[in-house]
Structure formats: C-alpha cells, structure tokens
Length: 201
Image (tube, rainbow, N blue to C red; front, side, top):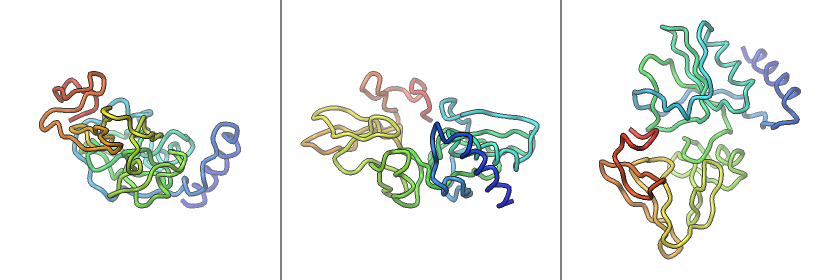
C-alpha cells in the first residue's frame, strides 16, 4: 500500500510540477482523530463525489488531486467524497461515512491541526496552530481561508472555526463576540438566523 501511494505521489508530482508542488509530507495520510458532527456536508466543502469505487481508489484519487485535503468513503453505497478542507470538530459528516482521512501538512485557517507546521504551507507561513485549530496570530484577522491581515479598528471579522461568533477589532486586537443561537452573517455584518447563513448549523 505504501509503495502504491509513493508511486501515485511521484506520478502526480511529475504531472503537476507546473501548477503546485506539494511538500512530500502532503502524501502522508492520517485518520481524523477528532470527532465530527453528524449531518450533511456543506456543498462548498465538497470538491467531488464518485460512486462505484473502492476505499483504496478513493484515497489514491484524492492524493492525485492537489485541492483534495480530506475524504471519506461510504461503504454501504460505494460512494467516495473528496473535500476542499480538512475539517474540524464542528464539521459535518454523514453517519454512514467511514473514518475521515486527511493529508498531513495541508490545512487552511479554521481546519484542525496538530502543530504550526500543518498550517504553514497553505497560508504562506502566517497561521499558527492554536488549540488544535489553524488560526491567525494575535492581532491579525482572517481575510479568507489562507490569509491574515492587521485588523482594522471597528471592523467585524467572521470566526472561521465557529459560525455562531465573530470578532470585532478594538484597540488593535480582535475581540470575540457571540451571536448566541444565531449565526454571524458577514454579508450584512450582523447576527442572522442560522438558516440564512450558508454552511452554518
């Protein structure tokens, strides 16, 4: 199995060198050790889904796709789902999925992490691993899943790890604010009904 993974990785690196060269550690696979919340995966997290294949095929297909950061296989229906994110403890996954597998060294802001190295490649080294979540350093705010910037006084920033909260920049520092039972809606810069915020449960 390891030799097959190494062969897939080598072939992928040769074909994709012009696009993006991933670090060798990105071809090491782990089973997610954190728990997921049962539910439907938000469509924006799904890279692609396949049916009629094996779990082994699912893994190798993900390793050959640079945008695939994690995947799961549903044996009952023979379905493979590749995901654009690694996920975190509040991420949704179906109850029928096998373990969720993820690639080492590739994590976006808001994704689960074990150490700072896992956050550095996709965020150009700016993110750090804080409480097992890739996060912006203190005083910086996420502008998307890969970049952090100095916070602007009295601006609001979404919490990439908790859709029920947000940050407000006050005296040059981010201060967490909770929406309670509501969800933060960045488009209106206010708390809103959970059903009105895509991807929030």
